[in-house]
Image (cartoon, rainbow, N blue to C red; front, side):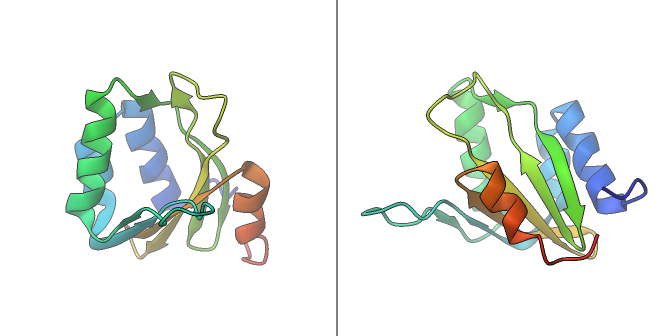
Length: 125
C-alpha cells in the first residue's frame, strides 16, 4: 500500500473515527454500491449517497458496526475488510471502494478476500 495515498488516508480516518457523516461526505452524490451476486437473488444495489446512507443507518440501528481494515490500495481502488461487529462467521465479505478524484464513486462487494484482491490485481499500486 502506498503510504501517502490521500483517498485511502481519508477513508482510513473515517473508519477509525466511526464517522458516518465523514464517510458519506467522501461519497459522490451518485455513488453506486453493488452487493454480492448470489444465486437466485437479485443483486443488492444502491444508486446514490442517500440510499447508501439508509443502508448504513439501518445497520447501525440494528446494532451493527465494524472495524474496517484497508488491505490494499491499487490505482484508484481500495480493498477493505469490513470486519463487522458483532462478527459474522457466515460472511467473509470484502469490499473495493473506487475513487474518482477525492470521491468514492463505486463500492463493490465480494464474497471473500481473495476475490476482492483479485479484482484489483492488474491495477498498478
